[in-house]
Image (cartoon, rainbow, N blue to C red; front, top):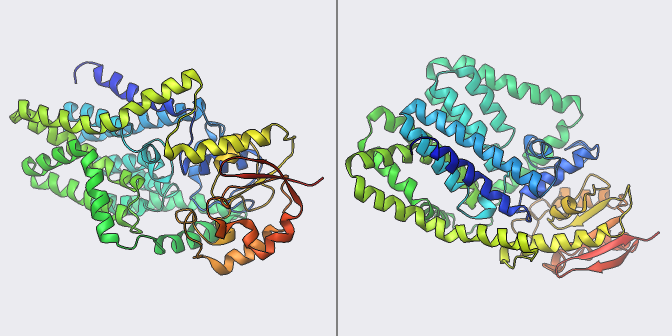
Length: 471
């Protein structure tokens, strides 16, 4: 792309996510709700349960833990930063053409794919910037800074271990400063955890719960599931896949080794836990964008017309599949009408439940939501009364299966957590799971039956029951 047209394209693609200002997607709402708890003066791991690394909640503090326009503008700024880093990395690796194209491709594929994967900035998406920064520094042989950014990435997502491995391969002769930068960053975080008394909770919630969750995948046939979901992802990212094939065909052995090792380790991260969720593939996106951009430039150089036709067709598939949603969202936002999409049902129900609470909530009121419905906290602007604010640590059943299963993977600790939970006295209690899975309704647990007697029903939505504590 010539002139500044590519910059306009990147900015336009990044700002498309403003169309999602009226919705929250799964997992981003969890981190926004955690940031809201912090704004209420609570400390993660110590004062409330938070099973993700700390920088995920910290990111959403930049938007005041608000949904709507502040959130989407923050997201757009993050996309622009990621695209700028991709531009710098690819220009350093090859040249200006590849750099501009890689920035546009990253912005394109962060817009046109499943909203739950690319609109929701959870741990996998939030690791994009430190991931790219670490690889860029490693390729520039800035070992100390590569270690620092790997440490930052780890404080977003444990899968940064694979980014560390890529950087270590690039910095074989400079591992000492790399390790110093990594260890220094993690040491600062560790000191902060000990100083605030959050280390025991951090270990229990992020690592013990996280390990049990990772090793307890509900996927029954991971090989078939992995193959199918990887092929589906590559189908929507066919332009990158085709460009990468050309890259490996026409590039030097050294370039193939660099990109190949980065790609292999990134795909290993995708496979970790054998869930193959769509947002896991974001770890693979940076290397495919870089290699794909190089391959497309090489193909244009040698086979301009057929290469252009193939790339246009490949890009048209995700554009036509996911593009119309932006227009529909913008129109509904303009006219004030609700969306009717199946994947937005829970969020819309949470908006309705929060609206019931806001009509009579008073300053100082607190909230507990049974189920995994953190968006109710975000829309209601209330904090929890105690350590627990969703039912996962109380039932031992993770959110990825609690709509259809009831067997706990965290049974013993969950029973102890329920004994602690019944000492809390939230003003508001929302059952956001019982109607979806009666086997995990709060009344199904003997410890909670007497506790529920202190609450009366004050409202209902399609999927939720809203209680208020009796005066």
